[in-house]
Image 1 (cartoon, rainbow, N blue to C red):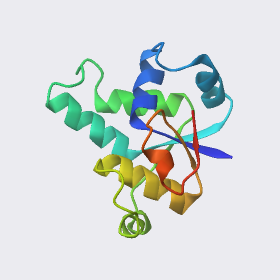
Image 2 (tube, one colour; image 1 turned 135 degrees about the horizontal axis):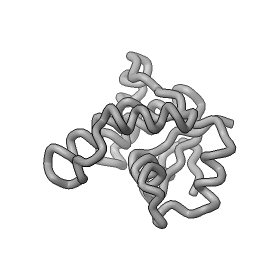
Image 3 (cartoon, rainbow, N blue to C red; image 1 turned 60 degrees about the vertical axis):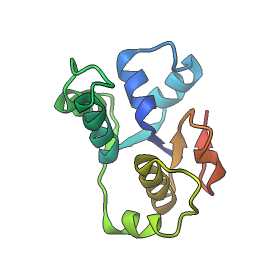
Image 4 (tube, helix red, strand yellow; image 1 turned 30 degrees about the vertical axis):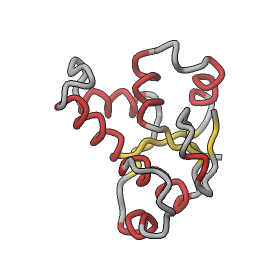
Length: 125
């Protein structure tokens, strides 16, 4: 099974935050995981709005993810086409894209988000 890390999962993993349960960190460390380029985009936007610390650059987040063995998941037309079929449950465009990517690529999303599991997508946490 392959996993797609939600943006907050990446942030908490990189920061070694206690918000990320040890069981989830162990799952991430022992599994095939990927991260969406959309998550880096979301982090950049939040940094530009002052909602996230800018101490770690987007390039550094990508480097840390790569060093952890996470595969970078690009955004492809099939993902965008899939978004059009999603029910209007979640308003967050980044989460909608992650859901579409997980559906299209048969990935399980590692997330604490309570809305994402309302979609026909596999989640853990």
